[in-house]
Amino acid sequence: MARKPATPSPTPKPADPVTMIKKPELLDEVVARTNLKKRDVKPTVEAAFAVVAEALRDGAVLNVPPLGKLRVVKTKALDGGASVMTLKLRTPKNATLDADNA
Image 1: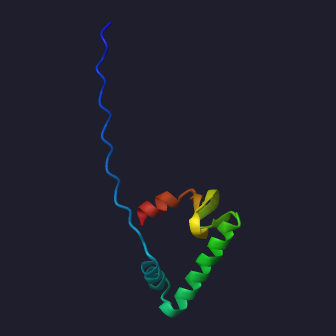
Image 2: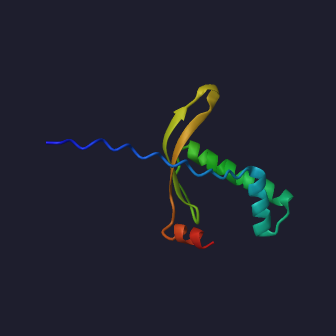
Image 3: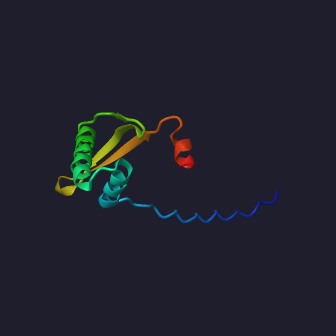
């Protein structure tokens, strides 16, 4: 019985470059969407992220529409007091469709 030659494994496609939104761009986008002044938006956004970070560190599950439900799957402590959190985000039913139509 003849053996088939092994087919080479497909070459993996290079990953699409990831768009990183840094804090200044995020603040600018919030300013644009709310028509508020940056001096009013910045402390509010920073406070909201501080609350989210604290809740995740405490192991809380966050349900924040339209973002979705966010929970910590696992954590790993790093040197210097830092840690890595693996998060699971469950988006609402039509979130993908809404994002595609935007």
